[in-house]
Image (cartoon, rainbow over all chains, first blue to last red; front, side):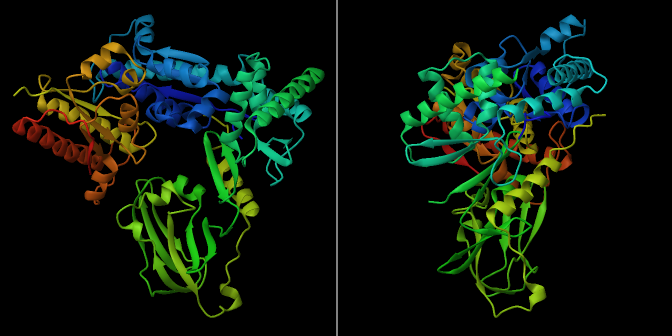
Length: 245
Length: 154
Length: 145
C-alpha cells in the first residue's frame, strides 16, 4: 500500500489553458514524473480530481502532495485544500520565474525557449521538494532506508494485523452489531488523522466511515454504530501509538 | 450482489470479485446458464487503459486453451486474449461493437467478453490452472508493486 | 442574429495522451477561429466557482473536449450548472480514425498531432455551422463522437 514504508508524492498540475505558465506546469510535472523522479511520484489528474475522482482525492489525503500552479489563482492548491485537506507544498510558476530572474514564458500549445527554461527550473524545484518530503528533510547516509525502517517498525508496533489474503496490507478487524468486518488501510488513515491532531468527534466519525468505504466493501450496517466503533478504534490506536513512542 | 476483495497500490485500487475464478493472464470465468462467461479483471482493464476496440472470435468458433479468443486495442497496447478453457464460443457481448469501454467501466458486470460452452474434456496438458480470488489477488499484488517501480532514482 | 463567442474547454487530463490531444485540438480551434470568435478558458477556475471566469461563460457557446469516457470537463461543468452546448470525445474521434495511434503526453507523436488536427477541424466545422444557422447555445448537451 502506498505510503506504508516507501512513500510516493502526488503532483497536481493546474494545466491552465489561458496562460503559458499553465503549459509550463504540465511540462514540468511530466518531466519529474517521467525522468527526474519516476519511482517517487504519481500524477493526480486535476480534472478527474475536480470531477470527484475518489482514488485521487484519497491519495492526496494520505500522501504528501505538491500542487503546481501557473499563476496566483492557485487553482490546484485550492482544489486540494477543498477536497483533500490541503497540499504538503505548493509551487507557483510565475513566482519561480520571478525569483530566478527568468523571462516570462510565452506560447500556449508549445513553449518558447524562455518557457522551456522556466519549465526546467520548476521541474528541478519539484524534484527537490519531492526528495525533501520523502526524507523529511533529514540527512542520512542511507537516506530513505532509515525513514522506511522507522516507519515500518512503528507501523508493526501499532498495527500487527495484516490482511488475511496474505498481502502486507494493514487491516483493522472490528465488530459492528453482529457483523465482523476486516477494513483495509484504516491504521494508515488513523495515523494521518493523528498527525493532523484530529480529536474524536461526530465529524471525524463521519469522515472515518467515508474513508473506510473507499478502501473496503462494507455491507449494510448501522452507520451510526459503525462511526462509533471506528472512533473507539481510533482512540485505541492513538493510545497504542503513544505507548510505543 | 457481488462481493470484492481489494488491493490499493499508490492511488490505484484493484477489485477482485470473489464469486469467480481467474487465470494468470487476468481473465475471470463464471459459470452461468449460458455456459462459462469470460471477462477481464479490474486489474487488467486498468493496466491496459481505455479500450477503443474489442474484437471477439464469433459465435460457433471452436477454441482450445491458449487459442486467441479476442483482441483488444487501447491507446497503450494491442492485447491478444487467450481462451482460458476449451470449448465453443456461445455468445459474444453485443455491447462490444458500439461501447467497448464497458469492459473498463463494468468489468465484472456488463463488461463481459463471451460465453463459452465447454467442449469435451481436454487432454490433461491443455488444462489451464485457475486461481481462486485470493490467489489472484496475491498474484496481482506482486505484479502491481513491481510495476510501480523500485525506489532507485537516478 | 448575434453570434455567441465560443468557449472551448478541454479536460487537459494529464494521465493519458488523449488528454493532450484534446487540449491541442482546443487550442487549434481557437487559433483557426480567431480571438474574436473563440477562446479557451481553463476548467479549474470554473469548477472552483471563480466569479470572473463564470461570468465570461454566461454569454458563450460552450464546447467541451474530453479525453476519455470519464468526461470530466462535461461532467464538472454540468454539475456547476454551466450549459454545455456540444461535447466532443477524443476517444470517439480516435475510433473514427483507427489508423492513428496517438502517443505521448508532454509531447504528442505525429499521429497524436494529426488526430488533434482532425478533431479540431470537426469542432471548427460545428462552430461554423452554429454561426451559419445563427443558433444560440441550447441548454441540452449534444454529444458528438
